[in-house]
Image (cartoon, rainbow, N blue to C red; front, side, top):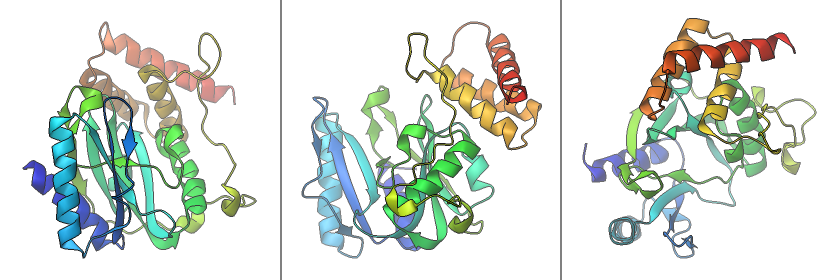
Length: 264
């Protein structure tokens, strides 16, 4: 699939499921984040959309800028977002969603269709629930979070391509079951569900192994089998280039996760 077609597939999915205004942004290598003139781009305004995509492609090619997209801010949208999924099938096999492969290390991002529009605060609260269930990145739970745009290079990850992976035709997710009782979603949904692993010197461990450990805990807690956890974690660790005895690493990670669950 060409880069242009990857981009068209992602944008087309947004449009098909009720997202008709998109924000686009770039982050240059010096850290500058630019999106002032690329907000609320209507997908029916083909001239403006084409000009924006040409600018994004030039920035990605000439300046090694990273390219991002999200539903336009300030509105309710029938969509949820998860980042750093080890395996998109935990989402796409059950819900109407599209998966974007961002890199071997970063895994997948998923955009999930919902049965009703949600405010940013409601999206945040619902995403916290999904993060706990699927082991996604807990730092990407905000309702206005940026995702990668397919068809562009990920210069944070050595210039690998960001690819549109799949779109499923499963039912849209009913978000009413994702926002916990007693949580005021309009005040940000301040209920924390994830269980970060403490770092060796304090704070939270954000390493790849910590992400994988958290995913295994949530996968087993949700009823996943030990063998399937082994298969998926082994594939993930191999794809990100982990060195050493991967079998031992995978077995130890799963054993530690089982021990953690038995203590709670």
